[in-house]
Length: 258
Image (cartoon, rainbow, N blue to C red; front, side, top):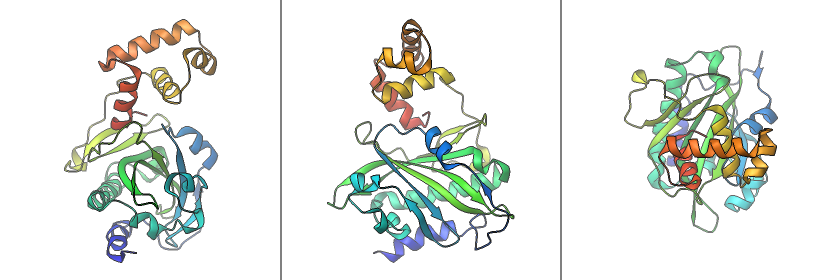
């Protein structure tokens, strides 16, 4: 275990919004609802970090099929250690940007209404690296609005993209505005709301296509006609200036649109 690697990230997490033990008056979100609302365009596992204890509260069994490690061995230190060396310094920057975004751009009440997203490479036990879409959202805070628990989701996107844009996205949920594809050298103070390329229904179509659903299945899932699905698909291709839906999905994942 490379302790210097762990310390590099932990120093970022030790900033003001990361809590020390104080479990009074917790604010909580429903995990099942969150998992259902967070889009993952491939195999994924999820975990819960308890920042007050610097430990994992839970790790989903899928981590074994994706990274080859048993859930009980997937500690916070292990998570940091398997990040590719080239990506680690960017991870520190991403996490610093997340903290600045939360402290400077939104109110504590909105901690629960933003999903943070960026990409990195994580090492499998066989020594190969997986391209991972990392997504995280605050689960609980204490009475002083400091973060207690965070839900993290790691999705294997190697089948979609093997490039790493050095960007982080702040994706608004429950009607909040999004800030997408923010470069690591961007000043958080100067962020502007990202324009939405697709409608909510078009995003649903893209998500369904990425999950392998046929036009007929999408129509059934969304309770609309096959003709309506086909019209949406045509509009999506036109708006995105892409040749096919595979290219649309790749673009959407890279930009944090889904």
